[in-house]
Image 1 (cartoon, rainbow, N blue to C red):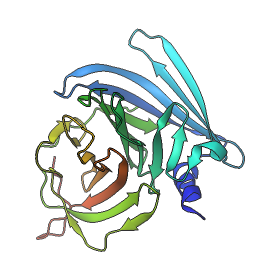
Image 2 (cartoon, rainbow, N blue to C red):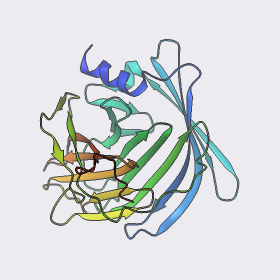
Image 3 (cartoon, rainbow, N blue to C red):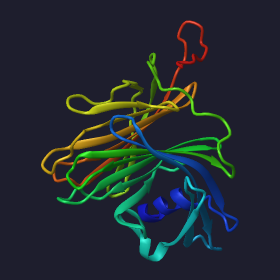
Image 4 (cartoon, rainbow, N blue to C red):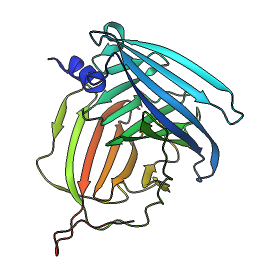
Length: 271
């Protein structure tokens, strides 16, 4: 199987003709963590018999109770490309996957006068979180949208608190290049809560989410868009979208960390 077909399978191989529905609460934050708006929405994915067409339906419930529904058809023949899957709503982006629901939607390139965005996905059992990072046409960080989703029903438990600190964790790292080639690190990695240095801004958000991003992106400078989530008391996931100095998407990095008490051999809870 070539890399292009493997990426399609990683994204949609588990989608059936019956379909699946992610029921979510969407909360948009300003760069200063102020809530801009919050609403409910359902993202539903349904495949045809041979999984060559995915019907994607979003149904939004606004704060005034009104509803809006949008439907897209993602066709393998036209949307599956050597650099990822094109979503009909976002032609300048690509969707890429390591498999096992480690997925991301990323803008292909930073272009002058245009927005750039990435949505990084974290899944654990029947829960999924999308962290969407959006930059304005000026290159300035505009907002962060957290989409907290549950399979086939809306979340019925409140979001957990922000992360205040993390003890020592260790984990594994995988790399997905812009040509969809996947490779893995042979070495265990030690977790650093702030994954980059310099001018990047670290933002801790509810439900164990940490975002680390530059406040401004510029053509001619490399940059990284990083999001992480404490998906369980003993598992911390992090995704990094890397862009080169031409503004082009270069690589997605996936890291999965675990935590164990070295003295007692027991899992600690960092919250």
